Every structure is written in C-alpha cells, then in structure tokens.
Amino acid sequence: MKNLFRLQIDSNRIFGLDILRMLAIVFVVLTHGGQFIPKDWISIYTAMLFDGVGIFFILSGFLIGKILIDVLEKTDFSSRELWYFWSKRWSRTLPNYFFFLLFLLIFFYPQSDVNIYKYFVFTQNINHKPEEFFSWSWSLAIEEWFYLIIALLIFIFQRLQLFSKKRTILFSVILVILCSNILRIIYCMNEGFGISVFENIKYSLVYRFDTIIYGVLAAYIFYYHREFWEHYKKSFFITALLLTAIIYIFGLQYYHEDFRRFSCLAAFTLISLNVMLYLPYLNAIKGISSGISRPITYVSLISYSLYLVNSIVQYSLGMTFEFWDAPRDWLMNHYGFNLKWGYIGTFYFILYLVFILGFSSV
Image (tube, rainbow, N blue to C red; front, top):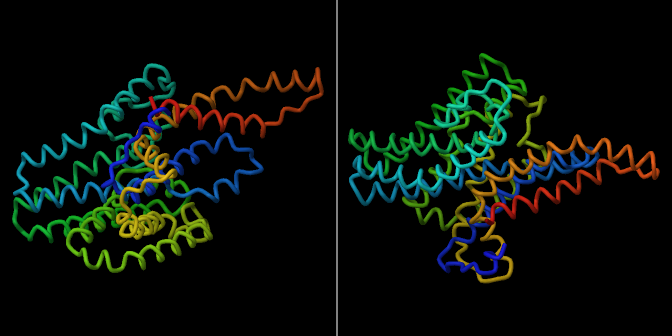
C-alpha cells in the first residue's frame, strides 16, 4: 500500500476511465466476496451489484479499438504491425495469467476431470460455463480471443481492399455483432431460455464475444465522428444514468423467468450499450489532483492483479469455513455464547478485502 502514497499521477491520464475501471473491479471483488455475506443480507447485497466484467469488456474494447484505428490510419497495417499489436497485448496480460495458472495447478490442482490444456489455449469456455477450477478466467479467454480475431479481421479486410479504412472498422464491428447475435438466437431456439442457457451465454466465448465490440464501436465514433461525440457527451451521460437506474430497478443484469427471452438474448447487449454511453463524458475527464483521485487511480492501476488474486483469496478463505463448526459448538456448550455465522462471515469478508488489496499491491 505504500505505493499509493508515492503514486505520481500523469496530468494527461484520463481520470474518467480510471473511475470506470475502479468501479469495474470493485463490483467484481464484491460479487466474488458475496459468499461471506450473511444470508439475511444477501438479497440486498446482490441488488447493489453491477456487471463489473461487462464494464471491463467495454473499456478494453474502447482502448483496443483506439489503438487499432490509429495503427490502421497511420500505416498500411501489414503483417508486421499485426504481429506487433498482438505481441504488445499479450506481453501485458499473458505473463500474469500463466503465473496464476501454474500457481493454481501446484497448490489447488483440480480433483475432478478437468482438461487442463484448455486453460493454456483459452478454450475453457468456448460455448459453455467454465469448470470450477480457475473459473474466473472465462473473461480473460474472451478478451484474448477478441484481441486475436478483431485484429485479424481488420487485417484481412485491409488486405482485400474491399472498403476504405473507416468502413473496414465499421464493417468489422457490424460483422461481429451480427454473428454473435445469430449464434445466440440459434442456441436459444435449440436449447430454450432457461437459467442454464443464460449462464452458458453469460460465461461463454462464442455467445458473449460481441460484448467487447461495443467498446470498439465507441472508439470508431470517437475517432471518426469527434464532433458528435463531444456535442452529445452530457446527453449520453444522462441517458446512461437513467438506463443504469432501469437496470437496477428491474434487476436486468440477472436472469428473470418472467422475461427470460430478454435475459438470454439482450441483457448483456443492454449492459454493454449502457456502459458505452458513459464513455464520451468520462473520457473527457483528465488528470485530477485531489485526495480522492489517488486511491481511485491506484485501484485502477492494480485492477488486473486484483482480478487474478481475488478469487484465489476467496477460495482459500472459503475452504476454512467448515472448520468453524467445532469452535462454535464449544463456545455454546462451555460459555453459552452463540457465535453467529453472520459475525464469522463479516469477519471473513473484511479479511478477504484486506488480503486481496495486500497481495495485489506486492
């Protein structure tokens, strides 16, 4: 945590995106820590949560989209530029990913029949929920394949010279949106609209691949229609707030039996569009020198480490829950003290937050 006080914030850093990234990891951490929340509070607790991974997806798409468009406009986007883009992205994400994967294989090797090799090639959740082992890697698999495919699509269209550079980006966005939606519709028509289908769509690479592309669409508007982007940023922000309120009021980020078709086919698209509408306004908020900006920026900077670490801490603490039965019985029998699970859960929740912040700051 000492790095927090030494943190030098670049005045050109986009603080608005740091806010969004900080909120994303906070929602992810709180979602994973829900197992320590007392049952009497869990309904209220979950009602306050949002799709943190969905926020990460849009942010990732926006930043990657800006990079790809910039490269496309300034170069001929040759195979050399394509490989440089991939290698730069992978050098930032893969080392930590494989470190944690190997750590889990050494200390938490799965007891069930799990195809370990899939985690090395990011195919653990192609069209279904991932296994319990390293389950939170599902979003990383989607992102890694997105980096690979979207850049390759743009490269191919550019080589074929079917469109202008501007239309190459737009056509790539439209193609990904159409393909993902068609695949979701076919899947739901064959399997129905039950909660298991919703869960598979939520966590699978194929059916949620288009979630990130809305961030690229935002980058397209930012680059090619800047006047429109700037002129309506406040209107977009107000619309986003209203849409967020609707999502919270009706719990649209969760599965609902009453409108299960919407849950399976459109819920994640709605969340993506909601987050996308925040970008024009937040992207205009540059470096801010204030007491609150430092912790927000710090959490934003360690968000990837927090994402990888938090579930390991949650799992490790969760394994010790069963050992509290004997101490609880002993306290009740000898001293008449009822150590409620609510107290234990709250204590574990605090430990969970302390540990993930500590480990992520190393």
